[in-house]
Length: 514
Image 1 (cartoon, rainbow, N blue to C red):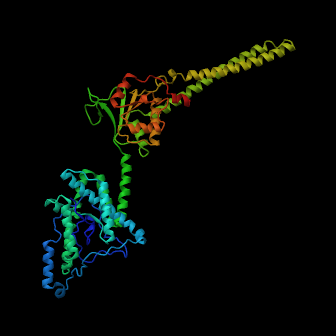
Image 2: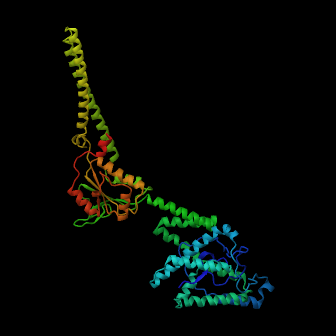
Image 3: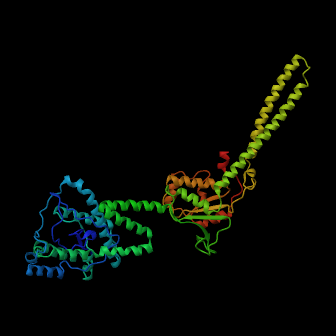
């Protein structure tokens, strides 16, 4: 279906709108190399250009050549004409390895643009006629065509949209039509091309400008992109400006780097939402967007529209704590401060009790001061034993007091006089999670730790099988976070959370830290 054509012919740009033969001075070839570098001053097309229905040799070209030859525009009026056009095919020449370093940059740029045009046109016709285009096969075909054509010093090969559309409109849907077209072009190159030596260059320039109208019409895409997607419009403008100012190869590099940076930025700005259940269904939707969705009492369901990775893991945690309506960090800080105060108060009470016991022991020893020397010595020994016994009792009391201070009843938010969250369970909808890195693993563990410290149990739902395998490989599951916290769907996690509300127990993480 596609008609192979040279990428750039006589300044027609990268749109592949050449007409089968290059009039005027050819693009300079590197000596003894099998490749030519066409002009690369035009920006790459964002979308395929509108078709042009000009034939290989339009009546305008033939008429202009005839008038120029009959009137003698060159000799009588000094009009510039195309001049001598070499006939026949160039002899095959092996590429020079010494020129590879000089050509590799521009050759890569031409290859990228040519392949982009070819695959775009292929997909357009594939949608029209109901078949599938294999990108790998198309790339191999372009590579072989350019490899063989380079030996004969041909222009880089891509596809011509106008000639492909003309061929399709005339019913040429097989490779036979392409073979006939190629044979006709070969005849022109070998013999008929030299008949156009008297073609005025002004007519040729006008033909080139007309062929470029499709690319110029792409400026109308600015309005449509402004309405559809302004980020794509920004990429379009950056690509256009960079290509104009820095040439095609550097412009493409800038466009690729800018697109990657935008991708990272957009990953850091996903849509976070709290989900609610649609009544009498197992469907959960954003409560801010769906009026019928209602939050399940005691359960928060949180979802992100993008995967969580090193680029947005911290933003994910911050958005989660913000959307839950609880200042988790402040609550944990207040809880730790109150626990420290209780611990210091307990130690002070134990110290006062120890001092009282020591004073009582001294009074008992003073009452026996008039006894004999042997009795005094024995009393001193007994006093030392009593002191040692009192110290051991102090240690036991302190240890017992610390254990009592860490009792679950004394470590709950309610017992400490702190406000409790309005939910007992948190369900993380991880259906958008496509991969897991080390930063993501640490962030998930921190989420479990922080919410457990405020007496909220965390569950994960809708994880894909590869994600679960990566969690296992990263040793995410342990004694505190087991696979019982993992569910196939959000609804299953919500039902389990409602059936097993978290009791007011202290987090094992907090006990360990204390």
